[in-house]
Length: 131
Image (cartoon, rainbow, N blue to C red; front, side, top):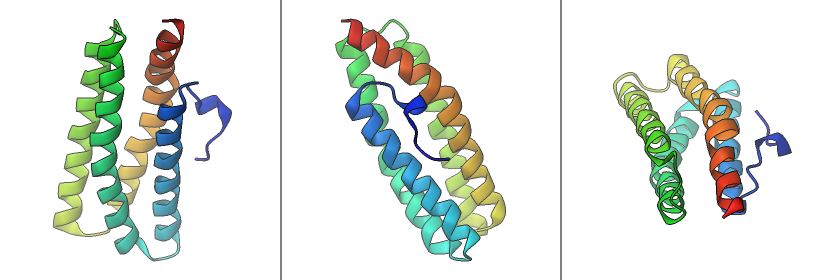
């Protein structure tokens, strides 16, 4: 999946982080296709671990700062993503870089992009811009 303006929220900080997320995901998919999955999946998992902490914390701070009315729902979605991510990471530690790990990672990230970024994050950015 490539970045295009349909994914833009209008909030430059959020958009910059989303672009980096897409870049890392695409890099992992390409590495798997080239038979270089082990190193790149590990790198992607490390990136995601840092990303969810940094990005979600930043978004949640913005929501608190602007008294975003959907804060609890948004935070709950972040928690759900973290839970799924932890499960994939544990599976990777047990089984190594198998296609099922790459597919699971790809699935949650694409679902996240479609459902969370295109809906929840855009709503948050719209709300902030109105304040």
